[in-house]
Length: 388
Image: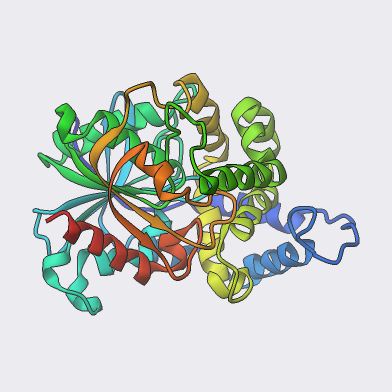
């Protein structure tokens, strides 16, 4: 078993200076006239505002203090360094919950929900609802190591099960995820569930991970959802095709441009967040948006993060095989503001998962834990209570 090493975020001044010099030197070019400044992609006025804030106000050293407020570690599994937070709160080592982020997020997505989940009695909840939290950075993301070639969600699920059982000593655990975290968590339930001899005893998703073996719609509701999903992917899914088929071409551009990376990431935050009550900076602070971007930049991680898409197809894709179904109890949270990856009808989900808990959330989108941390935490607590 590899050593578990304490880890502290401490980026060198040289790295920060290199990034900021590129931010300052970014050359602006004309934006097309359009009634909606986001109609053709990243909003130029918004990115100019972000650049000005980045140069004049944003403080990475303050962000480091926030990131280091919770205990972090690294360990090596299958030859790869894995970074993770491990917060043993009021659960006292007895109720582990594994939280997995996606793209273009990071472990930072969960920071506002850590307190309510680990120390609920300090946040209006009950101590008996507390979890031990384990929050890893995906391989190739954030402060985790970079694989030599695309490594995907099946491999990640194996690594996570090893982390939880062999490295941290938890016999069984709960797991939650959205975006890629939703697929990794689904694979944990499918292949590493307690019903299969693994350690995952139940899962909670805010984005489903698999397609049923028979993807033929059976109800009018399913037909409408599929038609809408196909239309939304046609309009918004070009990034997915590029990152799945030609990730290295994209990486060549993004790795040399902090502003380009910010544009690529923040345009997705705009398109996937619940903006029903305001704009992007009404949902998140500029500091939150930039800290998430900076986690990619200070680690030179944007290239290996987009490799993760190509790895999906190298590992076999999303489709379940005939007879396959996630057997562990599954909770699904339906957030109304996730426009492109909208939750399917319950009947569709029942074909993939053993759905024992369902919640229709009042607000929130794709980045649920970051957008609505209190709602997210209470829903996860309610799901865990439903398991008995």
